Image 1 (cartoon, rainbow, N blue to C red):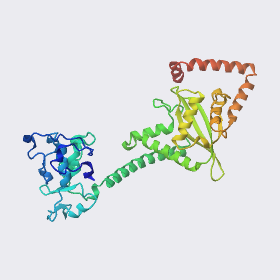
Image 2: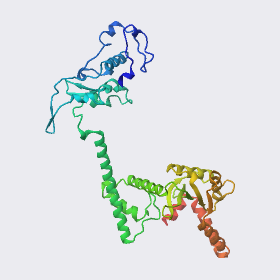
Image 3: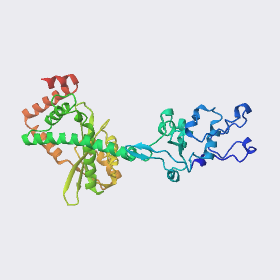
Image 4: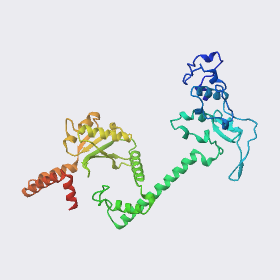
Length: 390
């Protein structure tokens, strides 16, 4: 494996020409004899007696590397390896390890009674730009507990995984405790304004914050909330089972007056039940039909859902949604003629009620005044805050 990086030099006669087939940089072979001496053929078998590659002259380093690769890693045979006490057990290095997949890079230092990595020694300073911080255990300090399973990567990952599970379990139990209390007392969860700076975020968030302030492990709930969302959407996609579905889309402004688009999937599950599931909420820069179509396709693609499986569309009566030329329904119908659009019945009822109510003179005046008030207050952030405070 290692020898594939450097081509062996056959003789001194051939060394005067550059190794064009080698992937390493071309080495200047016209070296001053006073510089060459023993440095060109530098080779110290015992790792503990070597000086770092970076301390050799730059124009000699590749030759030294080639020399080490040709000679191979230091792997003493027939040597009686000294024993060390590891937790009450006397253990020593085993030469059989030289016959494993580590045979080309694993080497042993008799002086230090430790193992080292030949590749790390030769190429350490060129690994990812980390310099001397890379591979100290296998280049400078040596490794004496090579087969200790408690220090293996898999063991470390398992411990980290168990730690994460434990943290999530604590946060999950806290959320469940709060939910149980609210359900038992019949207290509503949602508040009037769930913004971070709001003082009326609702009983669930306020009680959870109160709980978290008294328990250090609960202060960062965002991780488990994101996990909830991912697992919930995963269950929805599995329930859909790559079958046909319809989309229900609506958009509105949040408390910061940013346009948010909500997407709901409508489908029939394996039991023949009609299911509606919320898929996601996406911020849209504008509410044009093309922008909404792009965000819908992007959200579906995020969960590996094809737009060709859409068999129904449901929107309100806005022109951006229902327009026959450049409306959202028309754009999707061009891509998928089977995605039939149905006008939202609730919106139709709302339009009917408004039209009937306006036939009454007093109601018509009230609605006109209310519309003007909303336009005045909604046009200024300060006015909205004054109205909330009052």
